[in-house]
Length: 126
Image (cartoon, helix red, strand yellow):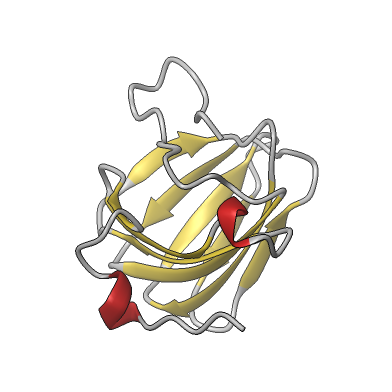
């Protein structure tokens, strides 16, 4: 059984500053669960392009407000109680109007050292 608390993760290698917030990585590939699970803080004012070419991701908002914009220009609001799933390796813009807290699941699981490429010229290293 795996039991972890946010307090235990804070300040460790599982508490990753990804440039526009903090990713608290509760479960990683090394945990052997077949998926990764994390709590991610996205800072207010964030407006980034993201695409995960090697992973599927589902996000559930527990705090804050923002939006995602898909490649067709459709904008979807994000607020507490909203889930979005990137089931086709969907390229998208993520915008945080306020600080956003998302619970995310990745399949296959991430290793834990992946970072977003925030330069805008490439997609993320996921």
